[in-house]
Length: 300
Image (cartoon, rainbow, N blue to C red):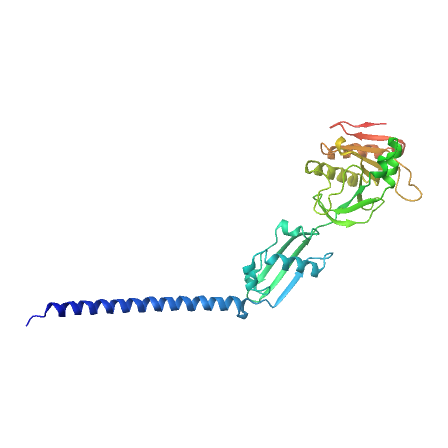
């Protein structure tokens, strides 16, 4: 007996429904597995102790306190991204490897700040490199000098005016306020030309900074103890140095010759010339040594 047409249709529909049920079952099982994995990973990242920090230590800092460093670090961890707040500060997953130069401008005493995370020990080591002070740059007020009638009295008034002094590092970056300093123990420059740019500014335009440091190097290598290093007028692009005739002690603190250097080129070639003059007994009787013309030296 042959099956009817209606029976064939019913069997085909039944087979199709079974296939759809199996397909839905596979899809449902897969989706449930994915959801379970996502929930597990969310729990692992947010709630489990696996990524929860146990200890944070700061190393390498001497002049900047731990509290200042951690305040800067905590402030920059989120970086304006609210989604990081879900993890919380004690989660290893949101800690950066280092802070950028822009971030460090908030605490300019720091040259670099990097983090080392240990997932095994659940700890963070904050490695700090502080800026090393090279010298002090003092900006002298020009208000009193402007009221003076002649250049001599202007110079005197500017020298006696209050100074705004800052520590700078080996790159010429100003990073900390300082008291005024006298003597030759600390490299100090009195600037009667520029106005202070404050923290994170440079002592000079970038093109002059290497040549300024070459002047410092020559003075140190020669053994000359400067009485005053002066920038009178930046437009002239030159540095004036007052010296002692002998050692800067109470017994021999006589004024020696002035030294003039240019900021347009390095001064390193003049070290042998200065050493030659220093070897002569009448060095203290000279009025000046002038190195403002490249590869030339003038004296009187």
